[in-house]
Length: 328
Ligand code: NDP
Image 1 (tube, rainbow, N blue to C red):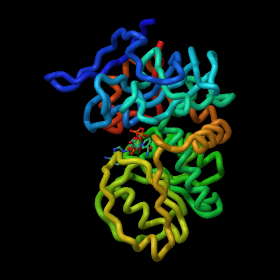
Image 2 (tube, protein in one colour; image 1 turned 90 degrees about the vertical axis):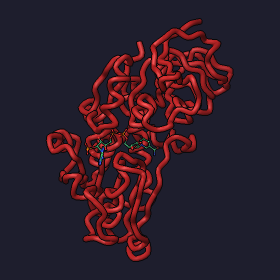
Image 3 (cartoon, protein in one colour; image 1 turned 180 degrees about the vertical axis):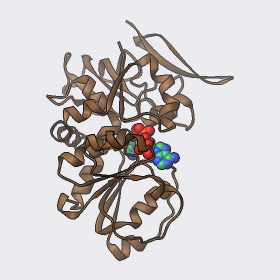
């Protein structure tokens, strides 16, 4: 059976992207074949589509690190035709043919059943960005950051990870401080539940002191670099900083002072290889702790044909919230 997909290939002039027909036999090994209905664009998809970072490690590649769809064929005991499934990460769009395709073949171990109450479109409105935001919130909880501990800072707040983190933390009762470079998005962020908005230049303009005035008990950081260093420096005694992103940079110049003098925890968050049990917990939590109205407010829907145009925009921090891509 033939199907259509975006295919990234490497030629003399660098990488090229084309929407084209593929034969099912071109799919990679896997025990479950999925009819994909929706995908999304995350920061990493922007890197892959533009070639700005070496995300793609197999050529040709179908980009797309996420998909939602319905099982078409399965030799995996856990899945049967008709099951509604989600896939986030596991090398999809990097080393294994990804989600910007009408058909995907993957290892059943990578799939999770789509929770009742979340549609395929909503699952991709959440996507890796939203699931990662929930992994960050769960890390704060594991380190005893509760709404009573004090405010939680969310950096890159108007982006995908940030928007979901703001909405979830507000619903859980936290006082959310949103850091953004887009002052024009203050009302949007307040609508999602942010109680205070700060200018991202406050934390990201340059290196600061190793210890600053204690301001927040927890941090969800999607930005890295100076922003993360300054966020750690202003974390209260016993607090926790969940670091998941690098939108400002990969670097992190800090000192041990916040860790050894204030007992601050720096919790690293990886969504790609996260164990299945934690993924299922995160998706169950998203079904419970993310308001559908907040999710709708942060989401726009586009045809998958728009992905190439969205890629430079997401890297430039111009995409607000989340984008669902309809595969069609
Ligand atoms: P988005 O582009 O949607 O959000 C990133 C946000 O960061 C922007 O909206 C902007 O927010 C802010 N930002 C952008 N550039 C800069 C800059 N130069 N300095 C400071 N802030 C900046 O991306 P996602 O939400 O999809 O991903 C966010 C980050 O998290 C990425 O680095 C991504 O790679 C990472 N990530 C990591 C995962 C993991 O497994 N560890 C999984 C998912 C994402 P604002 O306009 O509000 O300032």
